[in-house]
Image (cartoon, rainbow over all chains, first blue to last red; front, side, top):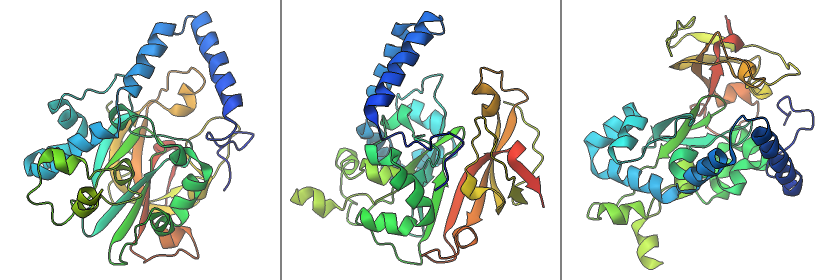
Length: 211
Length: 96
């Protein structure tokens, strides 16, 4: 795949030592030039690290059990996050939620780098940043789904969303069958990080009770 | 941010072709392709200016553009109903 204007065609997941040194150098420069303080950087890092896939799962499980909340979440995700006490840092890109159904399956990627709804579900998994995922998912999304263990019927429309700009996408997975009697807390355990990116489905209730 | 979009929902557009030596957010795989405006996101500071410490003005309306996968890849392995969506700033769109 062609690189995106960077001279070296880098993938952010490779050559960790080089990028770590570069990040340290940039941090030192930002502080030295008074752009921000070390405290600003640590506060923001803590804020990102304080969010995890469990936070997203909690929000999305609530949408499963409360249809009115789901409507609000799909219409204005940020306001709906706030209802549950999740505020986005001022510097966070916009976030919107896409619903997967029996007919439509959304999958998120950032082909340019690693754009991700960090403010709600924390840092992306390593594979999300790798060139292999970023390049393959746009060309062969069903192949990627298969690698993650999901085969979708051809009748289901697959929609790959490339978050290359100011919006980040969080996927509301399709609620699995046989979960009618589960509590919100139990349902949240079915919503994996992969299902919120769209490379997989929510877990089946059997798989959780068996494990 | 207030915006005054040049393109409307459902309108067919072409993605401009170009590989400037500077920062840009329009991947090459989508350049030159025709798609349909699926969502109007409002206007955002232009990342091509922000990347160099600029003010990002004038803000660029941002659009979600939808493409049938089979229009993008000759040997696409999936049904014709599969779609790719990507967010593109107005300065990268062309009228058809």
